[in-house]
Length: 299
Image 1 (tube, rainbow, N blue to C red):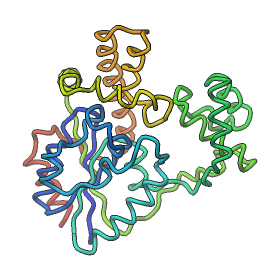
Image 2 (cartoon, rainbow, N blue to C red; image 1 turned 90 degrees about the vertical axis):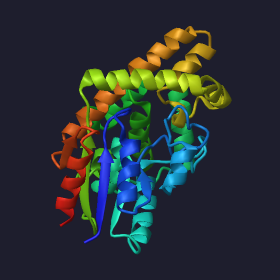
Image 3 (cartoon, one colour; image 1 turned 120 degrees about the horizontal axis):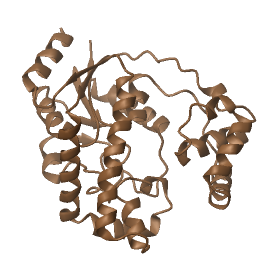
Image 4 (cartoon, helix red, strand yellow; image 1 turned 30 degrees about the vertical axis):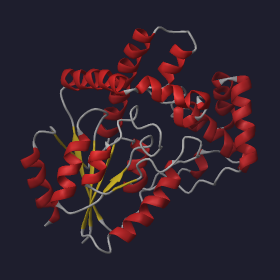
């Protein structure tokens, strides 16, 4: 049976290095499931694989879109499933890696069949958001779809706006399109989770942010500053520097906020992942144990 190894974990845990090792072992390309590394011109702030790493192993969904391109987990499901079907013709085992929870679920469980939002509705809702603000939209969602209102992250404008788009466009609740049932996949899925002690992970995150600054994150953020209104740039590492460019924060404060928000994001990722009982957890340095676990699952 064909097998997909999904290597996942929080930001900064060390997925990239291990994914390269596993890809070489199984002679597999690497399929990224990172919703930000998919954008070109954001390579430093998203900690995308380096040109050297990209040369070692063929990667998919790295730097293939522009920040102005609209993309969703549902589109990723369609594109990645098509790619997997093609790659499984010549491979028995494939490696997928990343930390974007919705993208991982899109492949492992499937996205509900929610209608595509038309351009007119999307434009109307974006204008409504800019004029009325997130709090007003949350109140509307509470009226139109109280069930989804009770579970959605109300601080995430993308989720709130999307739910309202569906409500306005279809006249039905967003909840009515969410079946919550997992799709059957024609391949075995082996989920390997990477984790570290909190102190160790936070230290790695802090040092990685310092390295990003040294590598030119400020200059990268300045290049995309005119596009700051886009969802692709509502991203840790960029939005903090945009506040610095606006004169609201000093540079040292912005850098500290990047570190803090990265740590918060890593906690959110782990909270999400811990709900999934199909994930087997390892420290990234337990390479032999990870390889033995995969071999056992492949039997």
